[in-house]
Image 1 (cartoon, each protein chain N blue to C red):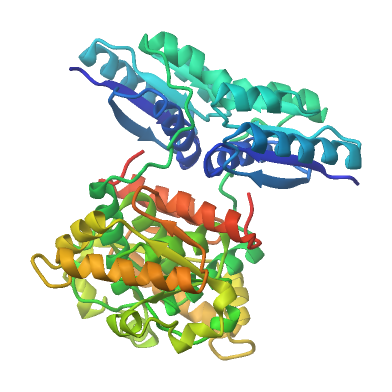
Image 2 (cartoon, rainbow over the protein chains, first blue to last red):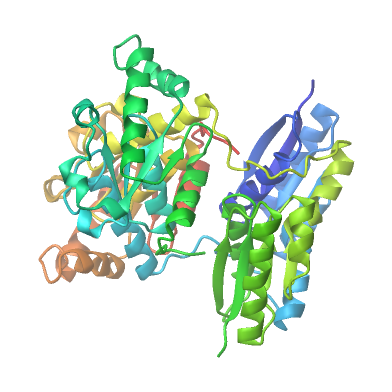
Length: 273
Length: 273
Protein backbone atom coordinates (compact mmCIF):
# COMPACT_ATOMS: atom_id res chain seq x y z
CA UNK A 1 0.00 0.00 0.00
CA UNK A 2 1.30 3.40 -0.91
CA UNK A 3 1.56 5.66 2.08
CA UNK A 4 0.51 9.21 1.70
CA UNK A 5 3.08 11.87 2.51
CA UNK A 6 2.28 14.49 5.09
CA UNK A 7 4.29 17.71 5.22
CA UNK A 8 4.56 19.87 8.33
CA UNK A 9 5.40 23.36 7.12
CA UNK A 10 6.47 26.17 9.37
CA UNK A 11 8.38 29.40 9.25
CA UNK A 12 9.69 28.48 12.67
CA UNK A 13 10.59 25.17 14.31
CA UNK A 14 7.69 23.11 13.01
CA UNK A 15 6.77 21.96 16.51
CA UNK A 16 3.27 23.46 16.35
CA UNK A 17 2.61 22.09 12.86
CA UNK A 18 3.76 18.64 13.93
CA UNK A 19 1.72 18.71 17.10
CA UNK A 20 -1.48 19.76 15.38
CA UNK A 21 -0.99 17.46 12.40
CA UNK A 22 -0.16 14.47 14.51
CA UNK A 23 -3.14 14.96 16.75
CA UNK A 24 -5.46 15.09 13.72
CA UNK A 25 -3.92 12.09 12.00
CA UNK A 26 -4.37 9.91 15.08
CA UNK A 27 -8.09 10.34 14.46
CA UNK A 28 -7.72 8.17 11.37
CA UNK A 29 -7.03 4.69 12.62
CA UNK A 30 -5.38 2.13 10.42
CA UNK A 31 -3.94 4.63 7.94
CA UNK A 32 -0.21 5.09 7.71
CA UNK A 33 1.57 8.23 6.68
CA UNK A 34 5.07 9.23 5.74
CA UNK A 35 5.86 12.47 7.56
CA UNK A 36 8.28 15.18 6.51
CA UNK A 37 8.92 18.32 8.53
CA UNK A 38 10.06 21.43 6.66
CA UNK A 39 10.96 24.02 9.30
CA UNK A 40 12.18 27.60 8.82
CA UNK A 41 10.35 28.16 5.53
CA UNK A 42 10.65 31.89 5.95
CA UNK A 43 11.49 33.22 2.50
CA UNK A 44 10.16 33.03 -1.03
CA UNK A 45 13.15 30.89 -2.06
CA UNK A 46 12.56 28.37 0.67
CA UNK A 47 8.86 28.29 -0.14
CA UNK A 48 9.68 27.45 -3.75
CA UNK A 49 11.98 24.66 -2.60
CA UNK A 50 9.20 23.33 -0.44
CA UNK A 51 6.76 23.37 -3.36
CA UNK A 52 9.19 21.37 -5.48
CA UNK A 53 9.50 18.72 -2.78
CA UNK A 54 5.76 18.56 -2.29
CA UNK A 55 5.04 18.27 -6.00
CA UNK A 56 7.70 15.59 -6.38
CA UNK A 57 6.03 13.55 -3.64
CA UNK A 58 2.70 14.00 -5.44
CA UNK A 59 4.19 12.75 -8.71
CA UNK A 60 6.04 9.82 -7.21
CA UNK A 61 3.19 8.55 -5.10
CA UNK A 62 0.24 9.37 -7.25
CA UNK A 63 -1.50 10.57 -4.11
CA UNK A 64 -2.03 14.17 -3.18
CA UNK A 65 0.18 15.03 -0.16
CA UNK A 66 -1.31 16.73 2.87
CA UNK A 67 0.21 19.93 4.24
CA UNK A 68 -0.25 21.07 7.80
CA UNK A 69 0.89 24.66 7.72
CA UNK A 70 1.56 27.21 10.40
CA UNK A 71 3.03 29.66 7.89
CA UNK A 72 2.00 33.22 8.64
CA UNK A 73 3.78 35.37 6.08
CA UNK A 74 1.39 36.06 3.22
CA UNK A 75 4.03 35.95 0.45
CA UNK A 76 5.40 32.62 1.62
CA UNK A 77 1.97 31.12 2.18
CA UNK A 78 0.73 32.14 -1.23
CA UNK A 79 3.54 30.25 -2.93
CA UNK A 80 2.89 27.05 -1.02
CA UNK A 81 -0.82 27.36 -1.73
CA UNK A 82 0.12 26.72 -5.37
CA UNK A 83 1.46 23.22 -4.68
CA UNK A 84 -0.50 20.11 -5.66
CA UNK A 85 -1.52 19.17 -2.13
CA UNK A 86 -4.31 19.51 0.39
CA UNK A 87 -3.31 22.65 2.23
CA UNK A 88 -4.58 22.76 5.80
CA UNK A 89 -3.94 26.28 6.92
CA UNK A 90 -3.84 26.72 10.64
CA UNK A 91 -3.51 30.49 10.59
CA UNK A 92 -6.14 31.20 7.99
CA UNK A 93 -8.62 29.15 10.01
CA UNK A 94 -8.21 30.98 13.28
CA UNK A 95 -6.51 34.32 12.84
CA UNK A 96 -9.58 35.93 11.25
CA UNK A 97 -11.98 35.13 14.11
CA UNK A 98 -9.32 36.16 16.63
CA UNK A 99 -8.75 39.49 14.90
CA UNK A 100 -12.47 40.21 15.03
CA UNK A 101 -12.80 39.20 18.64
CA UNK A 102 -9.75 41.14 19.81
CA UNK A 103 -10.46 44.06 17.48
CA UNK A 104 -6.75 44.00 16.66
CA UNK A 105 -4.94 43.20 13.50
CA UNK A 106 -2.35 40.45 13.91
CA UNK A 107 1.22 40.92 12.79
CA UNK A 108 1.34 38.19 10.09
CA UNK A 109 5.02 38.06 10.84
CA UNK A 110 6.95 34.84 11.29
CA UNK A 111 6.25 34.19 14.90
CA UNK A 112 8.24 33.26 17.88
CA UNK A 113 5.72 30.84 19.18
CA UNK A 114 8.34 29.09 21.21
CA UNK A 115 9.49 32.20 22.78
CA UNK A 116 12.49 34.19 22.46
CA UNK A 117 12.96 33.10 25.97
CA UNK A 118 13.18 36.03 28.30
CA UNK A 119 15.62 35.74 31.14
CA UNK A 120 13.03 34.88 33.77
CA UNK A 121 11.61 32.02 31.71
CA UNK A 122 15.05 30.79 30.82
CA UNK A 123 16.17 30.85 34.42
CA UNK A 124 13.08 29.03 35.64
CA UNK A 125 13.49 26.33 33.06
CA UNK A 126 17.18 25.99 33.70
CA UNK A 127 16.81 25.84 37.47
CA UNK A 128 14.07 23.24 37.26
CA UNK A 129 16.14 21.16 34.84
CA UNK A 130 19.18 21.36 37.06
CA UNK A 131 17.11 20.36 40.04
CA UNK A 132 15.76 17.34 38.17
CA UNK A 133 19.27 16.35 37.11
CA UNK A 134 20.77 16.64 40.56
CA UNK A 135 17.78 14.89 42.15
CA UNK A 136 17.55 11.99 39.73
CA UNK A 137 17.60 8.39 40.90
CA UNK A 138 17.71 9.04 44.62
CA UNK A 139 20.51 11.56 44.36
CA UNK A 140 20.40 15.05 45.79
CA UNK A 141 19.20 16.03 49.21
CA UNK A 142 17.14 19.15 48.79
CA UNK A 143 13.71 17.56 48.92
CA UNK A 144 12.44 20.60 50.78
CA UNK A 145 12.57 22.47 47.48
CA UNK A 146 11.01 19.70 45.37
CA UNK A 147 7.50 20.22 44.04
CA UNK A 148 7.04 16.51 43.61
CA UNK A 149 9.05 13.36 44.34
CA UNK A 150 8.35 10.52 41.95
CA UNK A 151 8.53 7.12 43.55
CA UNK A 152 8.71 3.75 41.83
CA UNK A 153 10.72 0.66 41.02
CA UNK A 154 13.63 0.77 38.58
CA UNK A 155 12.49 1.53 35.00
CA UNK A 156 8.98 2.58 35.85
CA UNK A 157 9.39 5.86 33.94
CA UNK A 158 10.43 8.27 36.70
CA UNK A 159 13.41 9.92 35.02
CA UNK A 160 11.93 10.95 31.67
CA UNK A 161 8.67 12.02 33.29
CA UNK A 162 10.51 14.19 35.80
CA UNK A 163 12.74 15.76 33.16
CA UNK A 164 9.79 16.51 30.94
CA UNK A 165 7.95 18.18 33.82
CA UNK A 166 11.02 20.31 34.47
CA UNK A 167 11.54 21.34 30.86
CA UNK A 168 7.89 21.83 29.92
CA UNK A 169 6.40 23.20 33.12
CA UNK A 170 9.35 24.37 35.22
CA UNK A 171 8.40 21.91 37.98
CA UNK A 172 11.06 20.89 40.50
CA UNK A 173 10.98 17.10 40.34
CA UNK A 174 13.02 14.62 42.29
CA UNK A 175 12.78 10.89 41.86
CA UNK A 176 13.48 8.08 44.23
CA UNK A 177 13.87 4.46 43.15
CA UNK A 178 12.47 1.83 45.47
CA UNK A 179 15.18 -0.70 46.16
CA UNK A 180 14.72 -4.27 47.22
CA UNK A 181 15.60 -3.25 50.77
CA UNK A 182 12.86 -0.66 50.74
CA UNK A 183 10.39 -3.17 49.36
CA UNK A 184 11.27 -5.83 51.90
CA UNK A 185 10.98 -3.39 54.79
CA UNK A 186 7.50 -2.51 53.57
CA UNK A 187 7.81 0.97 55.02
CA UNK A 188 8.60 4.25 53.34
CA UNK A 189 12.32 4.94 53.08
CA UNK A 190 13.38 7.41 55.77
CA UNK A 191 14.62 9.94 53.24
CA UNK A 192 11.21 10.43 51.68
CA UNK A 193 9.07 9.75 54.72
CA UNK A 194 9.13 13.35 55.89
CA UNK A 195 7.98 14.52 52.45
CA UNK A 196 4.97 12.30 52.10
CA UNK A 197 2.73 15.00 50.77
CA UNK A 198 5.11 15.45 47.83
CA UNK A 199 5.21 11.81 46.81
CA UNK A 200 3.67 10.62 43.58
CA UNK A 201 4.05 6.99 42.62
CA UNK A 202 4.54 5.48 39.19
CA UNK A 203 3.66 1.90 38.60
CA UNK A 204 3.71 -0.31 35.52
CA UNK A 205 2.39 -3.65 34.33
CA UNK A 206 4.70 -6.59 34.99
CA UNK A 207 4.83 -7.71 31.38
CA UNK A 208 5.89 -4.30 30.14
CA UNK A 209 8.47 -3.80 32.87
CA UNK A 210 9.93 -7.16 32.02
CA UNK A 211 10.29 -6.16 28.37
CA UNK A 212 11.97 -2.90 29.33
CA UNK A 213 14.38 -4.53 31.74
CA UNK A 214 15.08 -7.32 29.30
CA UNK A 215 16.27 -4.71 26.78
CA UNK A 216 18.58 -3.33 29.40
CA UNK A 217 19.99 -6.46 31.00
CA UNK A 218 18.95 -9.48 28.99
CA UNK A 219 18.21 -12.65 30.93
CA UNK A 220 19.23 -11.18 34.27
CA UNK A 221 17.50 -11.77 37.57
CA UNK A 222 16.61 -8.06 37.36
CA UNK A 223 14.58 -8.77 34.21
CA UNK A 224 13.05 -12.03 35.38
CA UNK A 225 9.32 -12.47 35.56
CA UNK A 226 9.43 -13.44 39.20
CA UNK A 227 11.53 -10.48 40.29
CA UNK A 228 9.47 -7.98 38.34
CA UNK A 229 6.20 -9.33 39.71
CA UNK A 230 7.53 -9.28 43.25
CA UNK A 231 8.77 -5.70 43.00
CA UNK A 232 5.59 -4.36 41.49
CA UNK A 233 3.38 -6.12 44.01
CA UNK A 234 5.46 -4.92 46.95
CA UNK A 235 5.63 -1.37 45.59
CA UNK A 236 1.90 -1.18 45.02
CA UNK A 237 1.27 -2.48 48.53
CA UNK A 238 3.49 0.29 49.84
CA UNK A 239 1.65 2.96 47.82
CA UNK A 240 -1.68 1.66 49.11
CA UNK A 241 -0.50 1.50 52.72
CA UNK A 242 0.57 5.14 52.72
CA UNK A 243 -2.20 6.29 50.37
CA UNK A 244 0.29 7.66 47.87
CA UNK A 245 -1.42 8.67 44.63
CA UNK A 246 -0.17 6.65 41.68
CA UNK A 247 -0.34 6.35 37.92
CA UNK A 248 0.20 3.35 35.71
CA UNK A 249 2.77 4.27 33.09
CA UNK A 250 2.25 1.22 30.89
CA UNK A 251 0.05 2.88 28.29
CA UNK A 252 0.86 6.49 29.00
CA UNK A 253 3.21 8.77 27.14
CA UNK A 254 5.51 11.02 29.12
CA UNK A 255 3.41 14.03 28.12
CA UNK A 256 0.30 12.39 29.48
CA UNK A 257 1.93 11.36 32.75
CA UNK A 258 3.29 14.85 33.30
CA UNK A 259 -0.05 16.43 32.57
CA UNK A 260 -1.98 14.01 34.78
CA UNK A 261 0.37 14.51 37.72
CA UNK A 262 -0.06 18.27 37.47
CA UNK A 263 -3.79 17.93 37.16
CA UNK A 264 -4.15 15.45 40.03
CA UNK A 265 -1.90 17.26 42.48
CA UNK A 266 -2.80 20.83 41.64
CA UNK A 267 0.88 21.78 41.63
CA UNK A 268 1.27 25.23 40.10
CA UNK A 269 3.39 25.17 37.04
CA UNK A 270 6.10 27.79 36.81
CA UNK A 271 6.05 27.97 33.03
CA UNK A 272 2.88 28.52 31.07
CA UNK A 273 2.13 29.00 27.43
CA UNK B 1 -6.35 46.86 32.03
CA UNK B 2 -8.47 43.78 32.29
CA UNK B 3 -6.79 40.79 30.74
CA UNK B 4 -8.87 38.44 28.73
CA UNK B 5 -8.94 34.83 29.83
CA UNK B 6 -7.94 32.13 27.40
CA UNK B 7 -8.93 28.52 28.02
CA UNK B 8 -7.11 25.56 26.52
CA UNK B 9 -9.58 22.71 26.47
CA UNK B 10 -8.69 19.14 25.73
CA UNK B 11 -9.93 15.65 26.38
CA UNK B 12 -6.28 14.66 26.72
CA UNK B 13 -3.23 16.48 28.08
CA UNK B 14 -3.92 19.90 26.63
CA UNK B 15 -0.47 20.08 25.06
CA UNK B 16 -1.83 20.45 21.52
CA UNK B 17 -4.41 23.05 22.55
CA UNK B 18 -1.75 25.04 24.39
CA UNK B 19 0.70 24.83 21.52
CA UNK B 20 -1.79 25.96 18.92
CA UNK B 21 -3.32 28.65 21.08
CA UNK B 22 0.00 30.06 22.14
CA UNK B 23 1.28 30.22 18.60
CA UNK B 24 -1.82 32.16 17.52
CA UNK B 25 -1.77 34.54 20.47
CA UNK B 26 1.85 35.51 19.79
CA UNK B 27 0.52 37.03 16.56
CA UNK B 28 -1.19 39.70 18.65
CA UNK B 29 1.56 41.86 20.03
CA UNK B 30 1.02 44.01 23.06
CA UNK B 31 -2.03 42.12 24.28
CA UNK B 32 -1.86 40.16 27.50
CA UNK B 33 -3.87 37.12 28.36
CA UNK B 34 -4.59 35.05 31.42
CA UNK B 35 -4.29 31.40 30.42
CA UNK B 36 -6.04 28.43 31.98
CA UNK B 37 -5.55 24.85 30.81
CA UNK B 38 -8.38 22.40 31.39
CA UNK B 39 -7.08 18.95 30.43
CA UNK B 40 -8.90 15.61 30.46
CA UNK B 41 -12.33 17.08 29.75
CA UNK B 42 -13.57 13.71 28.62
CA UNK B 43 -17.07 13.39 30.04
CA UNK B 44 -20.31 15.33 30.10
CA UNK B 45 -19.79 16.12 33.80
CA UNK B 46 -16.36 17.56 33.22
CA UNK B 47 -17.64 19.54 30.26
CA UNK B 48 -20.33 21.08 32.45
CA UNK B 49 -17.70 22.00 35.06
CA UNK B 50 -15.63 23.61 32.33
CA UNK B 51 -18.61 25.64 31.12
CA UNK B 52 -19.22 26.92 34.65
CA UNK B 53 -15.60 28.07 34.93
CA UNK B 54 -15.68 29.71 31.52
CA UNK B 55 -18.95 31.52 32.20
CA UNK B 56 -17.68 32.68 35.58
CA UNK B 57 -14.62 34.21 33.90
CA UNK B 58 -16.92 35.92 31.40
CA UNK B 59 -19.03 37.38 34.22
CA UNK B 60 -16.12 38.50 36.35
CA UNK B 61 -14.13 40.11 33.58
CA UNK B 62 -16.87 41.46 31.40
CA UNK B 63 -14.90 40.17 28.42
CA UNK B 64 -15.76 37.11 26.43
CA UNK B 65 -13.15 34.39 27.09
CA UNK B 66 -11.46 32.62 24.20
CA UNK B 67 -11.43 28.82 24.02
CA UNK B 68 -8.88 26.88 22.05
CA UNK B 69 -10.36 23.43 21.87
CA UNK B 70 -9.02 20.11 20.72
CA UNK B 71 -12.07 18.27 22.03
CA UNK B 72 -13.16 15.51 19.67
CA UNK B 73 -16.10 13.80 21.35
CA UNK B 74 -19.30 15.27 19.97
CA UNK B 75 -21.28 15.11 23.23
CA UNK B 76 -18.54 16.88 25.17
CA UNK B 77 -17.93 19.46 22.49
CA UNK B 78 -21.60 20.31 22.16
CA UNK B 79 -21.80 21.19 25.84
CA UNK B 80 -18.80 23.50 25.73
CA UNK B 81 -20.18 25.14 22.57
CA UNK B 82 -22.94 26.46 24.82
CA UNK B 83 -20.56 28.55 26.95
CA UNK B 84 -20.35 32.32 26.61
CA UNK B 85 -16.97 32.36 24.85
CA UNK B 86 -15.36 32.49 21.44
CA UNK B 87 -14.97 28.80 20.66
CA UNK B 88 -12.07 28.06 18.31
CA UNK B 89 -12.54 24.48 17.32
CA UNK B 90 -9.44 22.82 16.05
CA UNK B 91 -11.09 19.55 15.09
CA UNK B 92 -14.11 21.01 13.37
CA UNK B 93 -11.83 23.13 11.21
CA UNK B 94 -9.69 20.33 9.87
CA UNK B 95 -11.29 16.95 10.40
CA UNK B 96 -13.89 17.51 7.68
CA UNK B 97 -11.40 18.27 4.88
CA UNK B 98 -9.21 15.39 6.05
CA UNK B 99 -12.13 12.97 6.02
CA UNK B 100 -12.93 13.98 2.45
CA UNK B 101 -9.34 13.73 1.31
CA UNK B 102 -8.69 10.38 2.96
CA UNK B 103 -12.15 9.06 2.11
CA UNK B 104 -12.24 7.75 5.67
CA UNK B 105 -14.40 8.67 8.58
CA UNK B 106 -12.41 9.67 11.65
CA UNK B 107 -13.04 8.09 15.00
CA UNK B 108 -14.19 11.19 16.94
CA UNK B 109 -12.88 9.41 19.98
CA UNK B 110 -10.74 11.09 22.60
CA UNK B 111 -7.40 10.72 21.00
CA UNK B 112 -4.06 9.62 22.12
CA UNK B 113 -2.21 12.31 20.28
CA UNK B 114 0.76 11.89 22.50
CA UNK B 115 0.88 8.28 21.96
CA UNK B 116 0.21 5.39 24.04
CA UNK B 117 3.88 4.93 23.68
CA UNK B 118 4.64 1.61 22.08
CA UNK B 119 7.66 -0.21 23.41
CA UNK B 120 9.96 0.78 20.55
CA UNK B 121 9.20 4.47 20.94
CA UNK B 122 9.50 4.26 24.69
CA UNK B 123 12.83 2.48 24.49
CA UNK B 124 14.23 4.95 21.97
CA UNK B 125 13.22 7.89 24.09
CA UNK B 126 14.50 6.31 27.26
CA UNK B 127 17.84 5.32 25.76
CA UNK B 128 18.40 8.76 24.30
CA UNK B 129 17.49 10.39 27.62
CA UNK B 130 19.82 8.11 29.53
CA UNK B 131 22.58 8.84 27.07
CA UNK B 132 22.08 12.59 27.51
CA UNK B 133 22.10 12.21 31.28
CA UNK B 134 25.25 10.13 31.39
CA UNK B 135 26.98 12.37 28.84
CA UNK B 136 26.10 15.70 30.41
CA UNK B 137 28.74 18.26 31.30
CA UNK B 138 31.75 16.41 29.95
CA UNK B 139 30.84 13.16 31.67
CA UNK B 140 30.54 9.82 29.93
CA UNK B 141 32.92 8.36 27.41
CA UNK B 142 30.83 6.86 24.67
CA UNK B 143 31.15 9.66 22.13
CA UNK B 144 31.23 7.07 19.38
CA UNK B 145 27.49 6.59 19.94
CA UNK B 146 26.64 10.28 20.18
CA UNK B 147 24.68 11.88 17.33
CA UNK B 148 25.89 15.30 18.34
CA UNK B 149 28.25 16.76 20.93
CA UNK B 150 27.30 20.24 22.06
CA UNK B 151 30.26 22.43 22.86
CA UNK B 152 30.28 25.74 24.71
CA UNK B 153 31.24 27.66 27.81
CA UNK B 154 29.49 27.12 31.12
CA UNK B 155 25.80 28.22 31.04
CA UNK B 156 25.55 28.62 27.31
CA UNK B 157 22.47 26.37 27.18
CA UNK B 158 23.99 22.97 26.38
CA UNK B 159 22.23 20.86 29.00
CA UNK B 160 18.59 21.80 28.43
CA UNK B 161 19.04 21.80 24.65
CA UNK B 162 20.58 18.33 24.72
CA UNK B 163 17.89 16.95 27.02
CA UNK B 164 15.15 18.41 24.88
CA UNK B 165 16.65 16.84 21.75
CA UNK B 166 16.75 13.49 23.52
CA UNK B 167 13.19 13.64 24.81
CA UNK B 168 11.59 15.16 21.73
CA UNK B 169 13.57 13.61 18.90
CA UNK B 170 15.36 10.62 20.41
CA UNK B 171 18.74 12.14 19.53
CA UNK B 172 21.82 10.95 21.40
CA UNK B 173 23.35 14.17 22.67
CA UNK B 174 26.50 14.66 24.68
CA UNK B 175 27.74 18.00 25.89
CA UNK B 176 31.18 19.21 26.69
CA UNK B 177 31.90 22.41 28.62
CA UNK B 178 34.93 24.41 27.51
CA UNK B 179 37.06 25.07 30.56
CA UNK B 180 39.51 27.88 31.03
CA UNK B 181 42.32 25.45 30.31
CA UNK B 182 40.72 24.51 27.01
CA UNK B 183 40.25 28.16 26.13
CA UNK B 184 43.80 29.11 27.00
CA UNK B 185 45.22 26.24 24.97
CA UNK B 186 43.22 27.46 21.99
CA UNK B 187 43.00 23.96 20.59
CA UNK B 188 40.18 21.46 20.71
CA UNK B 189 40.22 19.32 23.84
CA UNK B 190 41.64 15.88 23.06
CA UNK B 191 38.47 14.10 24.14
CA UNK B 192 36.37 15.73 21.47
CA UNK B 193 39.03 16.21 18.82
CA UNK B 194 38.46 12.81 17.24
CA UNK B 195 34.74 13.51 16.97
CA UNK B 196 34.94 16.82 15.18
CA UNK B 197 32.20 16.03 12.71
CA UNK B 198 29.80 15.59 15.63
CA UNK B 199 30.53 18.92 17.29
CA UNK B 200 27.98 21.69 17.37
CA UNK B 201 28.82 24.86 19.24
CA UNK B 202 26.53 27.05 21.31
CA UNK B 203 27.47 30.61 21.96
CA UNK B 204 25.74 33.48 23.74
CA UNK B 205 25.96 37.23 24.10
CA UNK B 206 28.21 38.41 26.93
CA UNK B 207 25.54 40.51 28.61
CA UNK B 208 23.10 37.64 28.78
CA UNK B 209 25.68 35.15 30.00
CA UNK B 210 26.66 37.58 32.70
CA UNK B 211 23.02 37.82 33.87
CA UNK B 212 22.70 34.05 33.93
CA UNK B 213 25.91 33.51 35.83
CA UNK B 214 25.10 36.33 38.18
CA UNK B 215 21.90 34.50 39.17
CA UNK B 216 23.95 31.44 39.89
CA UNK B 217 26.99 32.86 41.66
CA UNK B 218 26.38 36.51 42.45
CA UNK B 219 29.41 38.80 42.24
CA UNK B 220 31.86 36.01 41.54
CA UNK B 221 34.77 36.14 39.15
CA UNK B 222 32.79 33.54 37.16
CA UNK B 223 30.02 36.09 36.65
CA UNK B 224 32.27 39.08 36.04
CA UNK B 225 32.04 41.04 32.83
CA UNK B 226 35.70 40.55 32.08
CA UNK B 227 35.68 36.80 32.56
CA UNK B 228 32.52 36.31 30.54
CA UNK B 229 33.82 38.41 27.67
CA UNK B 230 37.13 36.57 27.67
CA UNK B 231 35.51 33.13 27.61
CA UNK B 232 33.10 33.97 24.83
CA UNK B 233 35.77 35.54 22.66
CA UNK B 234 38.14 32.63 23.14
CA UNK B 235 35.40 30.07 22.53
CA UNK B 236 34.23 31.78 19.35
CA UNK B 237 37.81 31.93 18.09
CA UNK B 238 38.06 28.19 18.69
CA UNK B 239 34.82 27.50 16.82
CA UNK B 240 36.04 29.61 13.91
CA UNK B 241 39.45 28.00 13.84
CA UNK B 242 37.99 24.50 13.53
CA UNK B 243 35.00 25.58 11.45
CA UNK B 244 32.55 24.18 14.00
CA UNK B 245 28.98 25.22 13.21
CA UNK B 246 27.47 27.33 15.95
CA UNK B 247 24.27 28.94 17.13
CA UNK B 248 23.74 31.95 19.34
CA UNK B 249 21.41 30.92 22.15
CA UNK B 250 20.74 34.43 23.44
CA UNK B 251 17.37 34.92 21.79
CA UNK B 252 16.52 31.32 21.05
CA UNK B 253 14.22 29.03 22.92
CA UNK B 254 15.32 25.47 23.55
CA UNK B 255 12.77 24.25 21.00
CA UNK B 256 14.22 26.52 18.37
CA UNK B 257 17.82 25.55 19.11
CA UNK B 258 16.96 21.86 18.93
CA UNK B 259 15.10 22.28 15.68
CA UNK B 260 17.84 24.39 14.09
CA UNK B 261 20.57 21.93 15.04
CA UNK B 262 18.60 19.09 13.47
CA UNK B 263 17.91 21.14 10.38
CA UNK B 264 21.47 22.38 9.98
CA UNK B 265 23.19 19.06 10.56
CA UNK B 266 20.74 16.78 8.80
CA UNK B 267 20.86 14.36 11.76
CA UNK B 268 18.05 11.85 11.41
CA UNK B 269 15.67 12.00 14.29
CA UNK B 270 14.76 8.68 15.87
CA UNK B 271 11.32 9.84 17.00
CA UNK B 272 8.86 11.45 14.66
CA UNK B 273 5.30 12.62 15.02
